Image 1 (cartoon, rainbow over the protein chains, first blue to last red):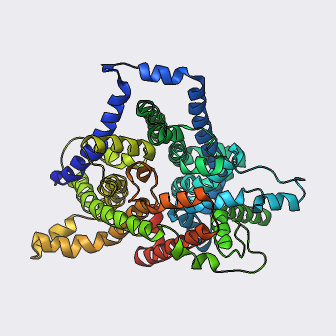
Image 2: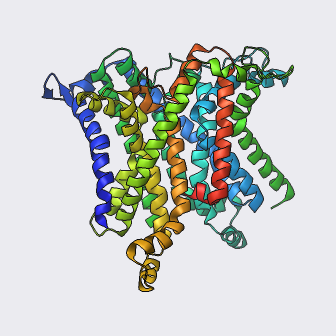
Image 3: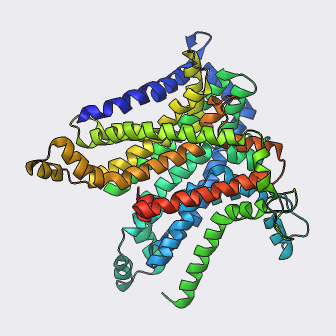
Length: 268
Length: 263
């Protein structure tokens, strides 16, 4: 039976591992010899460091907002009646199954100068003149949080669903207040789901190209855009390999770290 | 829980649902706009942007290309992935859990990085045609979905049922066909759906591997948005919403909603 894994493993070896290995090797080769010169040069430039920083900032902020908005949603959803839960499932599943292009395009309309958000803000008198939302970091994060939220909610919901409701009641009957129950019961139990959701949203945002391009504009510089530009526009492939490997490193460390943390909690 | 707390809870759930569904709603509304700007149709609806779709340059070619690539990639990864999931679960060799993580990893890694790496590798062996490049690459990103769903299905399957069927006189092949296949068929369909949707929606690989004659649908939509012409993009997007809803409804009928999220 073990031999059944060979076709897929061989395939991934050729089309996935080998290309990545060539990319990494390429980023370490400077004029024929092995060196970290490419990385030193890239990170030596303040402009490039700002690009890396913008990427980390965007991915971190979006993941944190998703976590804060998503946890209460998952918690309420886990305690909802059957038909409400089915409805909420549909509300999560439809955007997740729908093309990212459609949702990103929708946000370009929502954030526009004459868009629904500005009309709402004007109508309730919060602002006097339309605010600039499209092509700002605020607009980008607003749209990204809306689009990535299901990815945070589902893993948290899945773990919360397995916790019996009686656990909270037992805690309450023993005199634990709401805050204590949240900190000592729900939070530790939900942590693996929260870490999984965080890793998922972070890794997708750090690598996002379409959302930053459409919502923040071509002047907003982040790593994925720098990678695409280096290959398709400026033809500076060597720099592109360096940024690619850096991005790969960032995403892999966040995924591995969240996995390790989740496992530690599970054994604690 | 008090009534106020319960109502506040429902209000929060409704608000967040609106937040997640707003971009979809606005696209649907704009597609019926009577004016050539991205306006909400407050003064009457119009179907003019739908009538303009056949004139849009390259739309039909992109739709066909995306469906072809997704179809071939999904079929290939269903074969590779089913065997692989079975091998990891039933095989007796060290490092099986590591292999599972490895096979699932393309799902989490940055698409633009995979795209670049494959572009360099394919060019270096002289593969410059966009069509085979896209298919080869899409198998890599659809395979994890197949393996994840089918591995979960095989974990739940009781393999002693096959021995039972054989002891009752079935050949090994007949036992697999009559016992294993009907049991995992819903998961097989779910896996296929996830793989297909993943491939159809992918832009990162096509950004690098596509060429002028092979423009997938997401890239074509980006091109239309770049030219920012008129709400006909909203009409395309609305049709995509309709197709997605249809796929979900059919999938729900076939396998049930729980399985779609539980995967």
